[in-house]
Image (tube, rainbow, N blue to C red; front, side):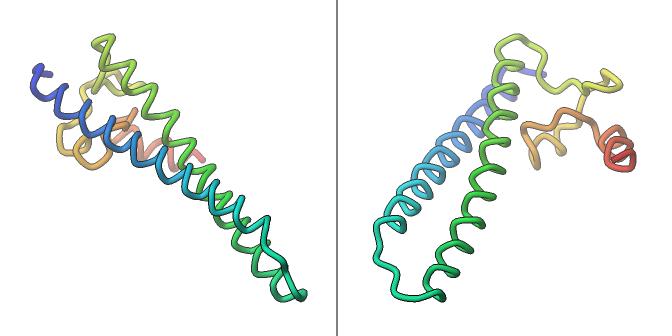
Length: 116
């Protein structure tokens, strides 16, 4: 992969990382604000618990993506970026454009998903 392509993906990944951190901080702030509210009835408690569960699930998903991005940024730094972890072939440019932190090529991704 050319240096300009690596820089392109690095910028995308770093931008996504900043956005995820901003989202996580925003959700944490919102959850902290919710915990200080006076809840008047069971409906309020149920709504708050439901919102907290949904937002916690979103935060967990984003933390997982953040970990994947960190691994991918390390691969860029080490010169291992864009190589499928299963077959060791190059991951297609178009696939990386859609999911810059992909670790499998299309074929191997399908194999992994079917085996789950």
